[in-house]
Length: 464
Image 1 (cartoon, rainbow, N blue to C red):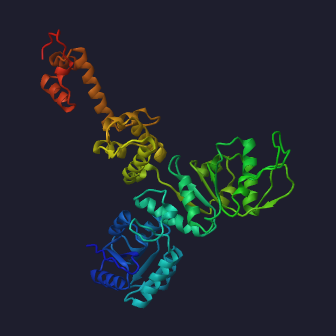
Image 2 (spheres, rainbow, N blue to C red; image 1 turned 90 degrees about the vertical axis):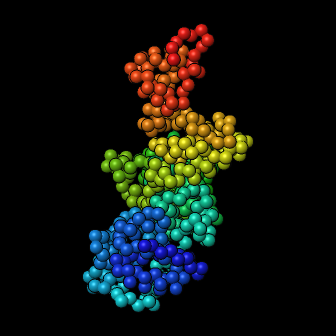
């Protein structure tokens, strides 16, 4: 059984994993006494379940456990969250095991019976290494760097923990994600968390600017460099001096310009269009794309040397469908903001309407969700956004496809309405046309709350 103990000293959460309940209890007692919050798990599968619900700041695991040993657990953790440190404990410690563990990325390795002082030293060292990277909803540390990113998804929390660590360095960051997932929001968050946060953040969409103008936008130009260049103009690299430049959709950058960008990144100098003079620049590069650059490189559309220059560290943003637990948070946040914008007094979504939003496929991700919510806010005439309004918005939206059960339900209702209109509310005739018996047909009408009398007119002689 898991135990949660909150310390007023540090509050950092540690997950302890061991199949020996006595060792687990001892670990918990010593860590809680040192001021840590502790969650325990009896095996690797239980540990992964805990991590899926709420990310700890550190994992301490036994090496030898049935089914999933400590190294297998580490591999599973590391694959999902490389920034989460792991310390391994074993009663069967050996130099080869320790070497293998540390080579694979395990933070620390202690043998049983463990010395409390050594254990706490390793714990403190691991938490210092990730200081500031772990943020939870009830954390007291500054969260302003990530305030624009609304989430309770463990996947997103892992991503943000990695982003905070990356922000502390000056390494180039590559963000992979579908259109509409919030790549620029994440880039801005990294900038705000970095030592460059007092300097400019400059974003450019490489796919939205014609090739002939993109070089000038990036590197600037001199007076007379081309028709219309009536004065010297600084490019975005110079405008972002000391700060961060975000190259969105870098996968769309033309090949000739990729060569010039590579030179700028390697030599940290740029040359404006029409100039023979190089200018030193100090910028941090964050780039992003929805394209698969590995495939682009194979097809000869993206330079391999540039790829490795921009992809020193990488982050992969999940689609909205991959973080459905965030949909209510995002939808209500958009609702409140847009209600203010349009002067509406809306309190939320009906339960069925929210279920529709959670179940929708969202090919356009967060951007599409915002568009859907805006449409419902504009059209809503009641304090709660209705199910029918959300259904209509999803159906009208480009690429919006409602779930099969909803589509079938809508078709069934519309079909019944057409039958009752055609027969002036005559159930017998309508059932015959639908090739269903009267009892079954009445059940269908009740399911959709359709009353035959509403479709009758005074001159009709139709039988009920």
